[in-house]
Length: 381
Image (cartoon, rainbow, N blue to C red; front, side):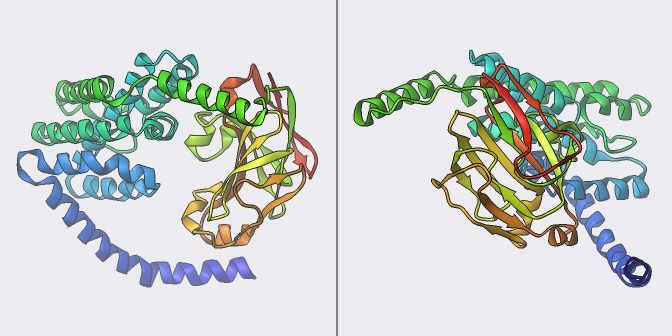
């Protein structure tokens, strides 16, 4: 009866209350968006192109789909698409610049696939895997995206659809006589994002590596402790449930492998266990994620749910703190899947080896149903 009553009540509310109210709200949003897009001298594109990727970081950028559909319904064209294409192109170009400039082979192998993902329309791997990590590339790409967005407005670019950008987005400009202008805008955004980052936004990690080496030497001299050499090890499942391939996770940051390799589990109970003897390196105040470094050198991220950071700790109970030493099987925290579902979110839990590049192989070792103590990932040094 519960699903039936829920659907009945919400259908009535949706048709007669929520729908009409939000129809009015949508109209105001559309008017506001069109007012910004109509600003002279490309100012609308400059503003939107400059802030779009900041909004992507927050995770609420999917609301723009509503705006784009409204624009298409009202005017049969979508100028918003060209502007965000400029912003995304600049983000990908900044990642390419980092990949070209760095001499670190691990960073190169991360940067170029992340950039390709960006040019196909998904910038999260580029943002979180590279640009935000070094800060300057991200903010310089915002400047390049703003200029590209302003150019898109000045050229009057408007796509014939939505949902695709950059390379696949080219199709939206083939039939409306704007293909050359579109390619010009993409080229300008790319050149600016690449040039600004290459010249001002990134210095290779040589200095950072030197600092790490110095810190290690100081540690050895003062404590006599030697850094642990990475070894083969088996990572256990942090939650019980059904194994999901990482590539099938509904979040490109994880499914693309930009964060590292691992597995995901659809939990059957709300307990997070330590997957190995480890030190807690990060314990998010919201309780939705944990960073660990195992005794054998693997760096792990356990992330409960997708976009669950937005719950601000509601439904999560953290049992450990940064710096704590834990044994395999110790409880790191608990969570309430029903509250995650009530928030409209997915409770699929990821366990990622974030220093995957330091190993010769990181492979899933589980399938089907897993319980506490089952092997989840095999890492080979």
